[in-house]
Image (cartoon, rainbow, N blue to C red; front, top):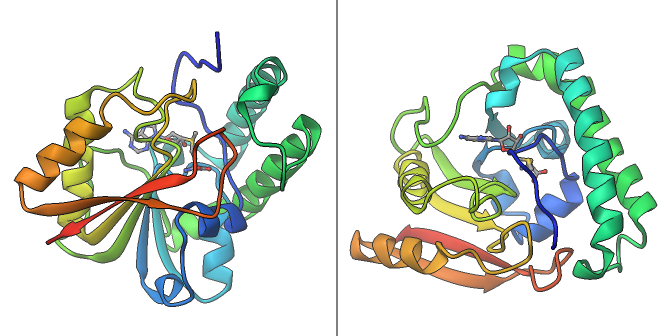
Length: 227
Ligand SMILES: C[S@@+](CC[C@H](N)C(=O)[O-])C[C@H]1O[C@@H](n2cnc3c(N)ncnc32)[C@H](O)[C@@H]1O
């Protein structure tokens, strides 16, 4: 049957995973970055510690650290069970087992939790949700979406995807989305529609291979910018 979830869940990846998923160069990491749907990922914390400029937006930031921790615990059990049941849909290389996956993810999420309250006060974690962002035009250089758009195609409409990407393009000069696959590992049914609509509206939409693959076949991102 493949991996399924009945709602979008808080689950967080590491700094190194973000760098690989979006093929971020040293120069990219010096830009003003917006993470949309960053949830409990460690990227914001680790990049800020390295002196980078990043703001993350996610509806889960309306909660406090303890409330988010308890939502992560519920998600952990659900995700680990599904991973065991669908092991062959994943590439077990850098992450070698379901157990190691659990350890890596929990460590990333602990990094996030330790940083959350101070980062929220500093304005690095903002509660909000696509397709409307509380930012001014071109406030950022790159806007990222990791494991939200396209992944949850069964939960969010094609029109939602288009409006979300257009809003990200309003506040940022470039958008990168990873992965292009749905939860069950198929290419998102909205990819072509979104790319075509964006091109009609004067944007270039290019699929680029990245040095990251965990979902089998999930080693591509969509890069969108004005032509
Ligand atoms: C699977 S997590 C991915 C977290 C992180 N980007 C990563 O890759 O590790 C999906 C996140 O999307 C967030 N989310 C749900 N609806 C959203 C919306 N409308 N706009 C932005 N983020 C949303 C959830 O709260 C959750 O934290």
